[in-house]
Length: 254
Image 1 (cartoon, helix red, strand yellow):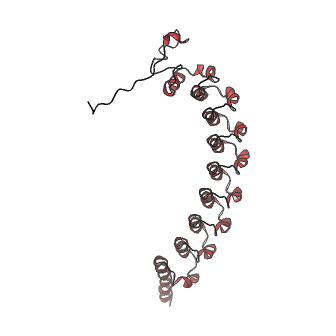
Image 2: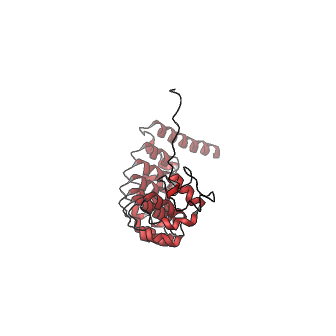
Image 3: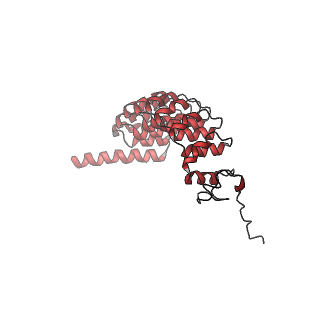
């Protein structure tokens, strides 16, 4: 019938060839088609190590990359440095996820970007800046998220927009003016949001109307008259509203 789906056939290993058949199998710690170390099924392998973590160390040099990668999750930390140069990037990613932060400097130059990204997320801050010039923007973005705000200046002119946006969000307020002329309006909008009122004056003639609007909403009204004829109606309305509110207050004071 067309509405019925074919049942999923799970891979099953030949238990007669398994060296654990008189151990884990008899103890109920493995099960054909569900919990098995010798079938090329990530789920079954993971279930096996979950039930029998002591065996993980014996499979760290296995020929099957997925078996090695899963074994890394369960093996004692002392055995993991031996896999830092493993030929498979998935294995090295697993190592990068588990190694203590102070040992991750050995993976700073790994050829796989996801390994380096994992390192950037976890490595001790004293080594993090060594990834600031990474060729991959995802790695640099991770670095920009973690570095102390006062050490972000090197990213102000980064070629990748997402990196500059993150820097604009974290740069110390006193230094925001360094990005006030960024080529991207997205960055300048962030700057306008974060800038102090007295510094935002420089953004009143920005080419992006949202930047002008944001600046106009916070600067001293004395700086607003030049925007009376702004090409954007929302900016003109805001300026008129702010100037009128000042006039009303002055009238009440009189």
